[in-house]
Image (cartoon, rainbow, N blue to C red):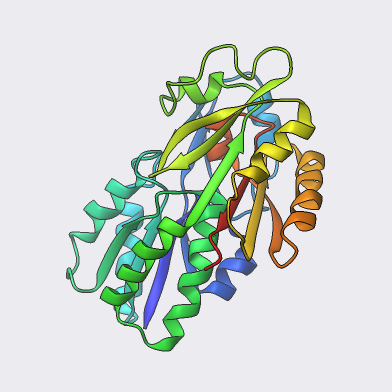
Length: 274
């Protein structure tokens, strides 16, 4: 049997993780010298107030030791392990998982760079979890994940581009975008990296441009936000009107991703009609 391991930026609830057979390894973040563990979605209460406190927020990738501990436990129980983590172009977590895997038999563990995060990872995990009961081999599962990840996309916007630029994960969007005249950048993950897709003035244009990123029919959409629930609801309403056959959920992002994109982020992840 194969067990799925992922990091906390998939933002699964504990119930979702249990039903999908997922083992979550948490990231950590530090505010004003105090460290916190990022939990399952819905278990990070109070982080908005911490981020609004004005103190600097620093995040840490999952440690090699944390991955090794989970891998060891699962292998002892007889599982093979597929570990799917946040894009290596957004975090060093992939490197940590890869280093940890070298302590174990190479035919028992595979580490896969998801090239995405948050709702994108959840969509991938949902597909993976449906394949495992078929008896698929670990090698074949990795091949399928690498095929599927090219069919899962993620777009988003931020209220202020400065936290993202300061994090070193974006360098190509002009300083003015997202800071004046109610103009917000429209961004997308491409090959695991953040790229600009333009800009939008006002919420109506923003919602239209986020939905326009979806260029084919889709059966699965996850809308993501941080402290922006009302706009997420509006985006969901328009998405349901345009993609009538899609299952569309709203998820709140946790502290680690929010620390890099800022409060008020709004995003959308989808599959290309898998």
